[in-house]
Amino acid sequence: MAAPRTARQKDVRRHLLIYAGLTPFIVIAVFPIYWMLITAFKQEPDLYRMDAIPFWFNLPPTLKNFEILFYQTNYGAWIINTMTISAWVALITLVTAVPAGYALARLRLPGAENIGIAVFMTYLVPGIILFLPLSRVVATLGLQDSWWALVLVYPTFTIPFCTWLMMGFFKTVPMEMEEAARVDGCGQFGALIRVVLPVSLPGVLTSVIFAFTLSMQDFLYGLAFVSPGDQKPVPVGVPTELIRGDVFFWGSLMAAALLVGLPVAILYNFFLDRFIQGITGGVVK
Image 1: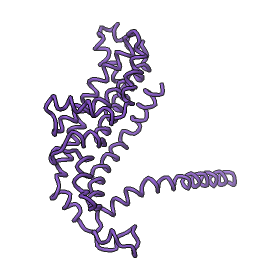
Image 2: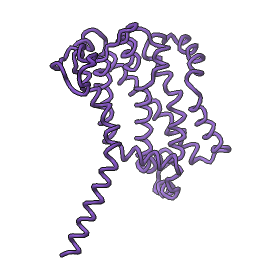
Image 3: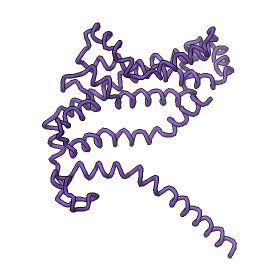
Image 4: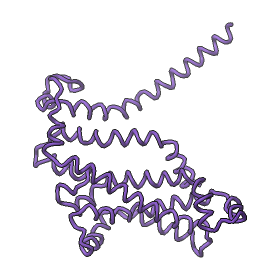
């Protein structure tokens, strides 16, 4: 009896030590969300009271910050624009990066490895350098001050990374699987669709998540190419409309960030295992 009890005590002690070690990191991760939440519901005078505890409500909560956000700005249009842009960019990236990565990984093209590295190197070019020539392209196509300009521009940095990612992931798929599909009557395209892509699903999902979220968080290109209030995405509309000179609408700023950021964080949790598998499987290997 003593031995099982001692083992149980050691197990409990080990878990307590693990949780004690994780607690500071959990606090650091959760505190910004908590601060955004209470700030979004605080009255404005409560935000500037120096004689009160700032970590809770000293005045009754209010929905005024959300009313300002939805009735005095184009926040609803910003969300629709952001989601539409991100969806288009993810689709364009997937349609382009998958065949490009497959060709570089499986078709034994001369210099394919160097081409893949060169493609990835373009992703490392800072956006502050690229937006000047891209502005000429956008103006020539007549897309200035439209969110379609961002659909055109964002793939310039999502496609290179996702092509390199898919290239690495396709290399991990055994060639024998594709050869067996061809013996069964599949062509090159049929083997890709029926055999290679299902096995490479984590890499595909990683590419989609990467392209989607990168499009959602960009500020520079949106600020440079989109000026009308109803055409802006959230990362541009929130700071430009809710910071007016030296007046910061802190409650509405936190509410806007919370309404967009929290659903994305929850969505990430559903695909976290796939995302990690795609990154480690494609990039590391």
